[in-house]
Image 1 (tube, rainbow, N blue to C red):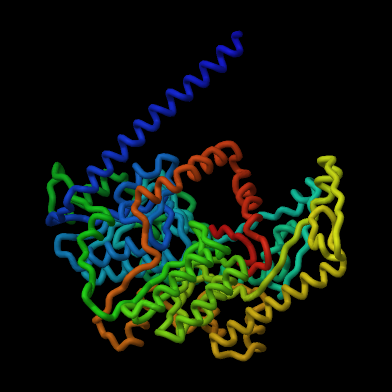
Image 2 (image 1 turned 120 degrees about the vertical axis):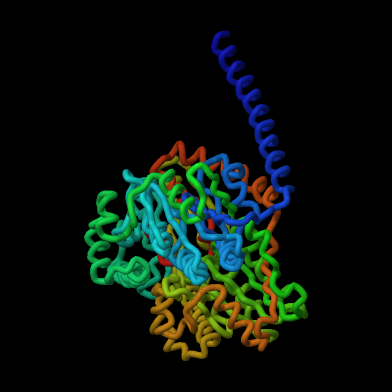
Length: 588
């Protein structure tokens, strides 16, 4: 009875906790809703505060995300910040006389190098106004410092630190795991650099994969050093030495080597900001966030007949209609809608994807090819536009990429798992089959593949590779043999890709939009509209509520093993022939 009493007490406790949690949640939602109805007013002598510490930089977010981030994300500091939203606010800050400067917190921002570069370029453009940028944080990641280095003054907490020691790419290999559980992967691929399958069959990088990874990492690191050297007025050779030998090991080292202006506590930095604003020590600093300032920005040429559609394609390329990915059904529809809309005069596809399903890529490629016949079609590559991401980009009139964009990886693979040992020997489960033809149970995972099956699959992969090559050759105006010389699944930076004819222009999204406008001979008479339409913040939050709770619980339970769990979960997206990045890389 005591046991039943304890169980009942736990159930009642959970029930009460759930009710209280729901009440608190809707109370917070009510507070947010009330706040969102308030009219935004911009006072004189205001600072734009960009607090990106701990934020995930994505292409675009709901307009309220930066404003209500602490409320919208009760499960941890993984709230998103939209690149489009931030650039809009920074542009408004540059031209608005009430904004005197920017206070920048970028410490542990989570972002790829290309998107950081694009945001950094916006901050550099802001500095042309003569207004100040002051950066402060307790600790800076490599990416956080890359972004902060654009500031006039960089302050670091006296006990803080700067991670400035170059980039490393770490991959997870599952070969040992599969051997322990009794799963035997079989791989079908074309190209010595198409190493997306390596985590399933090796326990370390192949020489080819190591070669290509070292090649593009060195390029990305050198680009970062070049830009930081200019901003901090340090010679490239000196900065390269500081970087390669990790000479910034203590907070004071950051000042000694010129990476930081001074070591200061945040209240001391606030005093510096007050001085710049001409305020007394007891005065309050007036700040505004990116969302509020962006809401005050006037839409450009709202009545213009020259509309340029920017279609934001971010995530893995998958079949069907799936949220949070570049799903073939959804994005084919968006491209088709823009093509058939007479008010849309040009299309810019913003691609940020490591690839995915070749079938989904082909569906989107078809719509891109049809769009090219109807109106100017430009591709802007973000952090990564590789493999399937390049496949869907190939039809464009012009491909624009940042110098440090990850692109290329023109290759293909197929993956199949033999689970016979797992189910027979480990689990004691056996199967038996009755079939009408020799291949009726084609690719049955409960047994090894036959040589006939292997031949069929390999042939399909090779046919897919030839199709991929032909798509690129047609779109780029290259001979297929020339494409193959830079293909074989090899990854390039934007700079390296441009040298090899895979990219036309180096630049960001604004560059791509300007190219589209130039093709229309529109001058400054054009308006940019974004697709797909963004859901209201509340709808987005509620749709991801369950996923966030589940993710947090799993992270707590699995700890350092959570990335391995994520890797295994991704296997369900590897169905069919794939055109995706060599591996899921963590560059840090």
